[in-house]
Image (cartoon, rainbow, N blue to C red; front, side, top):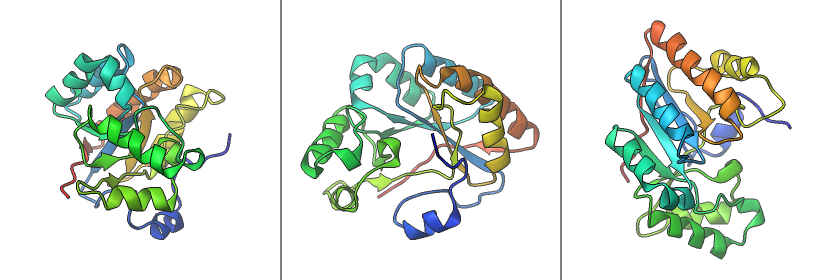
Length: 210
């Protein structure tokens, strides 16, 4: 499985209309979690964040929010932000534009947010334009650091190394509150929170007004 832990500058410059990292507020890091909420894993994440007073952004699947509304409610009640990640985790490259848009709007019935992250980071330029020109448009949020927690071929230690070596002020980091990622997430997340907190960093949620 090929992917880059750190997004190259040329990629973010090529797609300037998406958010790849946040302005370099001194020592601010932006943790994001995709694919939840999950009834056991998301509460683990929330508990770990709470230990360090950390805020984060959860890109949720609409279907999972519908199935676990109490967990989703807890995300918001604890002061985090949510984003739309489609209703059924669709790959935009493999989905007709109309169906893709409809699926995102279905998720919007459960997730009230202007933020959107495409599953797998894959969507077409036409899909992006449609989302950005709705009456209530979305802001596309990508990432600058990919932890690789979804990769079952790497060790938890490698996952942690991916994050520690690639993160700086303003970094948007991707984790997954999913069963597939949990072996690496449960090792890496507490270590990341401890490491950067001890260096004086703080963890912020992404807030975007359109």
